[in-house]
Length: 179
Image (cartoon, rainbow, N blue to C red; front, side, top):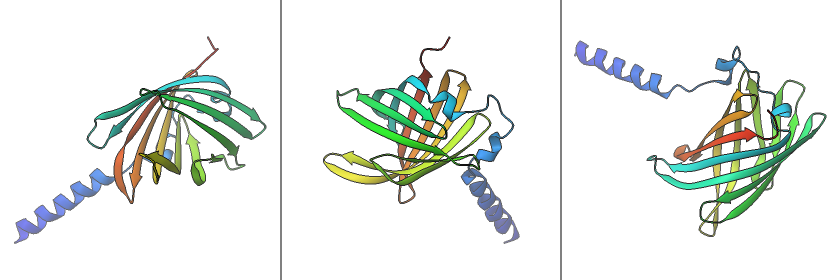
């Protein structure tokens, strides 16, 4: 009986350890420091894909972006082109708050997105109205961006509904026009 109890406790501890998630604070001492106002200013190009929860790639896409800032308020205009020819546009309005957090809105975002940077990372959390086969679904995005250097950001988003992981979006963003 005692051995079973120890085994059960060890199993629970292992499961809980596997459920732990990264925190934005884990990246506080990393470099380069991710400055959204500097990185998302001017033209950018991104290449990405959507994978379902099994890892199968369902869609690929490119995004042409143009960002501009006035003080602590920015606009990021995104033009998507999918591998099947579909196009989509999303225009973000971003606001840097005095405490260093960011808020964002867009036409297909439910309420506000919220995020924070630490070191080279940004965690961005929002709910998106996603069109699928003529219907619209509200899907949560847990969005991590990592600035690799002054011209490159790697973005990984986990999509979920009712806490169930639906898939992932991976995106490589490249700042244009800089050496």
